[in-house]
Length: 334
Image (cartoon, helix red, strand yellow):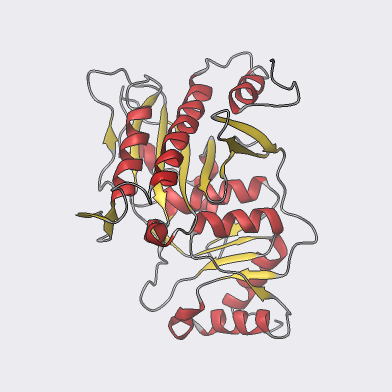
C-alpha cells in the first residue's frame, strides 16, 4: 500500500527544500540526511540501554574532566562514522574531543564543518531522563583543502544549519537552515522521521515559566538572585526544570518561557559550551521567534576564542530574555 500523501518524511522534506535553490549541489542536504540517520542509530541504542551492557561509565574522561558514559562513546562514534567518509565535510569537532577531528586522508574533504555534542545530558542516562544530540553546521572559511581550527571558531550568526535530536518518550529531530524551524518525529514502525511540527514558533503569549537550577542560588550575582526572586514572586512565574539541556530548551520552544544557565562564582564564564550547545540552540530559538543572550547581548554575535569555550545563557521568549538582561545590568527600573 502506498504511503499517505500527507505523510512527509525528512528525506522528502529535505529534497523539497533543496529544489528551491537551483544552484544547490546536494551536499548540504546529504549532511543533514546523514545526521538524521545517525540520530536513528543513537535512538535505537538509547531505547535498548536498560537491556544491554551499554549503561554506566566507560572508564574515561572527556576534555572537560567529566566521566564519559558508554552511550557517549557510542554516540560520538556513530556521528563520526556517519560523516567522515562522505566527501562533504572539511573537518569535525565534538564536545568529547580536545582538538578538531580531521577527515582521514583516504577520504575526500568537502566545504562544510560539523560541530556536535553527541549525547547531551548523559549524566541522566542511568535514571532514564530525556537526553539528546546537538549539532551545528558552518561553511569552511579557510583556504586549504581540509578544515582547520579557524573553520570551527565562527560566530553563531554564520551557522548554515543547527538542530538537535531529543530521545524522550518519542524521538524528535528539530532543525533550522535559517528559514524557520521544523520538527520531525521518528515513527518506529516505519523507521522514518515524519514531519510533525512544521514552522515551529515560540507561542505568544508564552507560558510564564522559568527554568534554572536553583541549587546554585547562593553562587549567583545579586542581579540573578533578584531576577529569580521577582519571577517566582511578583512575576507569578512557575518553575520548570528538567536538568537536561535539550529537553529544557525543547519545552521552552514549544511553550515559551525563559531558560537560564547563568554564570556564578564557580563558573564565572558560564558552564554550557558555546559551539556545541548554545550557538546551535540560539539559532533554533531565534529562528522560532525567540531570543538567546549571554546576559549582555545576542549570543549569536559572540566570536569564539577556543573550541570548548563556555558561556552563560538566557533564551526563550524575547520579552523575558530582555527582562533578564535588565536585571543583570542593574537597571533600577526593574
